[in-house]
Structure formats: structure tokens, C-alpha cells
Image (cartoon, rainbow, N blue to C red; front, side, top):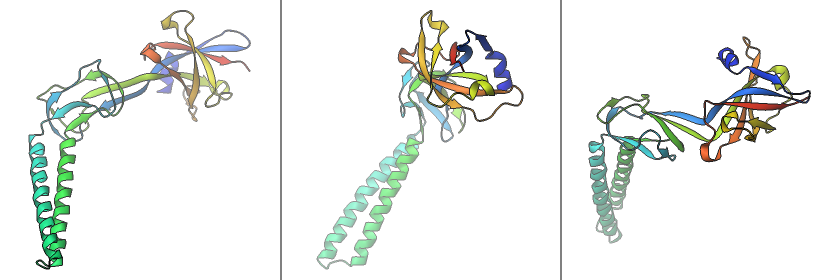
Length: 239
């Protein structure tokens, strides 16, 4: 993979004896494929491509009428068992019921509460939620379609921050340090649009085929003006 990237992310020309520029590729900070946790029929989809979403937001719902009924059933069961346990405990205090009978009723109440929690968990599993805050960039299924666990229903991208990925020779990468600040020029935003980023990742491996190491520079992206997939120029300090 690094060999193919090396063809795209070619080393830029040296600008002076003090510094050089390397072309890099803008990558999103996070990109996830969202899948259902269990098999089921999609009942509704709550978002469309281009929508901003927050972490934990429901993107789609699978058919869940049975799970909703089970939540209601267990809620009624908890009420009944709680009433029964409370009554038996009061009778036990007046020596009108055995203590072990009161303990048994309390256990039945607690088991009913656990069943209610399990029913709620089963209901929640039918909701397809976004794991991160970002933008929906792909919607791959429609209501009425059957989906299995692992099937990609949505793709969500976060780019309030972005990475610039560059490929450097070992000699170029070795002087860099995590957290080091580097100037990054963004030609797609016009002249004078240079920003400062910090080195966030230096691959400890050197690709045998290309001889390059991957380096990622993290940039803030207010207003999401820096688009993933575009190019940037990273200015490397001189020796």
C-alpha cells in the first residue's frame, strides 16, 4: 500500500538550503462504516447524505415491534412483583408471613427488574447509531431492506480536524518528533493559506518496497474548509 501511495505523494522540490516541501494527502480525522448489531428489517432511516450527526445519534431503526411489546410486558411484571414483594415483607414484619417467603418475593422482583433491563437492551440493539460526531457521506440501504450484522448502512466522516499524510525517507523522517509543529500550505484555499500543524504519528516501520515512512500531521479545520482528498504542502525544516 505504501508503494502505491509513494507514487501519488511524490517528494516536492527543495525550496532552499534551509527547508524543503513535501506534497501530502489530506485525510479525515475519523471515518467509520456503521453497521447493525443484529439482523433485521430496516423500518425507518432518520438521516440523509450530507447531514451533520452527533455521537450516539440514531441514524436508522430496524423493525422492533416485538421488542417494544416485551419492554411493556416486563415493565408491568416489575410492578406486579414489586407490589407482591412489598406486601409480603409487610406481612413478615407482622409475623403473618415467613421471612424466607419475603426473601423469595424480593428475589422474584429483582429477577423481573433484570428481565426488564434485558428487554430494553434488546430494543436498543435495533437502533443503528452513529459512533462519532461528523457528516453522513454515504447511505447504502433503504427502508424495507433486510440487513445483516457487518453490512455497511452508513459511512460517517469526522473532519473538524484533518491529517496530512506524507511519505518520507528515513533520513527525512528521523529528525522529526511527535508534537513538533510544521507549516502546511493549502493550495486549494488560494495563496497565503498556510497553517500550523503538529506531528501526530510517525510510522516506526520503513516500507521495504518504497523505502518510505508514513508521517501524519494533525490540523485544526474550523469551518471544515480543508477537504479530505485534496493536496497540501508540508514544509520540512532544514538540517
